[in-house]
Amino acid sequence: MSIRDIQGGVTIDILVVPRASRERFGPVHGDRIKVSVTSPPVDGAANEAIVKLIAKRLGVANAAVKVLTGLSSRRKRVQVMGVLPDTVGEMVQ
Image (tube, rainbow, N blue to C red; front, side, top):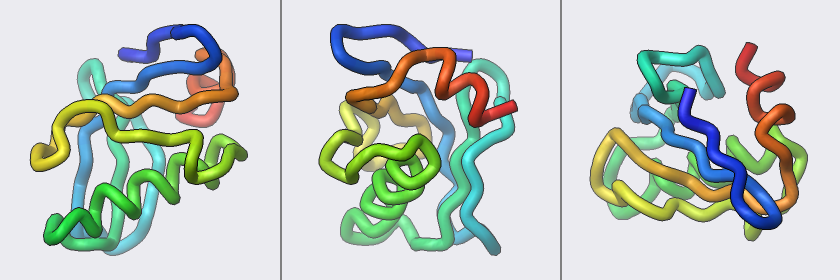
């Protein structure tokens, strides 16, 4: 699983499933965490849904979550400030 410790938070490699029937954080798919959102991948709607879902699941503010790479791809890297790698690992299992 690609969760990296950075100063003040973590980066997480995710695989996004847009237009899913329900929102979900996990399970691990290969070396990425699968994140399913109901929003379509249009005009950044899926990216906004990803930020909200991850923030809610990890108990941080939406502003603490940022999509770093892959804005128009299913494979993304997100940064989450204010959490530890172990916390993210526990939420996925």
